[in-house]
Amino acid sequence: MGSPALERTNIVVKNASGEHMKIHGKLECKIKLKGAETEGYAYVTSYNSLIGLEWIRANEDMKYHLEMMVAEVKMASTTGIEEELKKTYPEVFEEGLGRCNKEEVAAPSECAPSVLQ
Image (cartoon, rainbow, N blue to C red):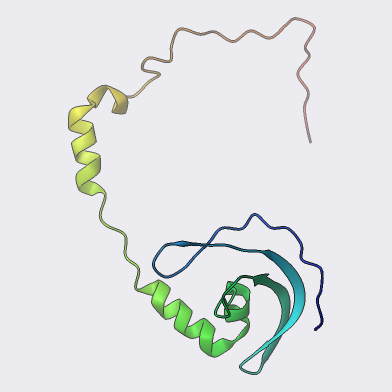
C-alpha cells in the first residue's frame, strides 16, 4: 500500500464510550473484509480498530449483526412530554398564527408571478 496521500476530513468519530477519536485523514481504497470486497474510505487514526460503516454493510454477516443491534434501540415515549408542554404552554398549541400576526408581506408591483409547468 505504501504511503498514499491523506485527504483532509471533518468527520467526527466517537468510540464506544462516546469519546472523540482523532482522525488524521482519509484515503480511498479497496476493502476486503471477511470475504466481502468493496471500495470506500479508510480513516487513519492512531488505533488499528476503526471499521467504517460502509465496510460493515459490505459484509452480509456483519450487516446482519449491525441491524440486530440497531433494531434493539428504542425511543422513549414522548406522549407524557407533549401533554406536559400542552398544559404548561397552551397558547403555543392553539390554532392560528398566535403571536406571528403583526407582519405583512407585500410584493412590488413590478414583480410578475411566474407559472412553472
